[in-house]
Image 1 (cartoon, rainbow, N blue to C red):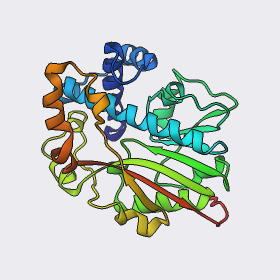
Image 2 (cartoon, helix red, strand yellow):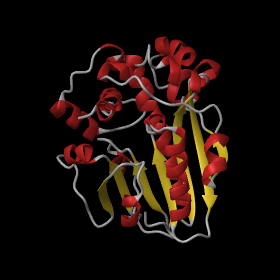
Image 3 (cartoon, one colour):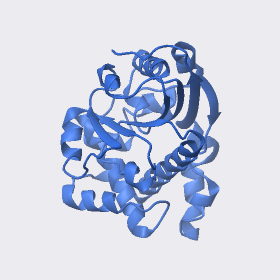
Image 4 (tube, rainbow, N blue to C red):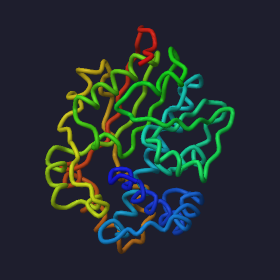
Length: 270
């Protein structure tokens, strides 16, 4: 795999570890895939603190998605940059159509472990292009999850992606995590993704940098480290985790934005 695609093993490892410990989420599939893949992570990429952070982040995304599924019973779910994540198993989507999207080489690996159904599809494509959208019903509400994706897209690419989504769906509800500009610059020198050869990422200091060009609007910023999840950690570790991954210090490098918008336009086919 290319370097960027190999970053998927970092959250996979984190979810497998917290699942084994009974923290935040239950993800037996992550445990199974990690045992089978045994990708040689090292250094900070295998830190227990990063595992906690990755598992907690996924739990926050899962909670948000569960709430949106209830609010939008006719919506299509789109998970952009799904990697080897088993969110479609962790979250009960009922009869909702669910589409997972990632690069062809990632999807080839994913298909070793997951199977399509009448309501679940795996799409091969580049998020920066729009051809894959033609395979997803348009003119209906869309719930879009972008976990660990935005930082690999240049600002114009991210703006164009969000604009396409806004145009394609009648209503778009989207949750995405972002690096700040400071974090993106610091990544060249210190970031667990360096362990798999990635040094170039991109950051945002305000959600308006993408909403103005996409037609979506900023709804709210979500907490990536909710207190009820922190309290699941061993007591001796909770304080350190709060300082390093929560509060004002963490917000200088990492944010979680919810965007939404309604469109009267016809679906895009490009």
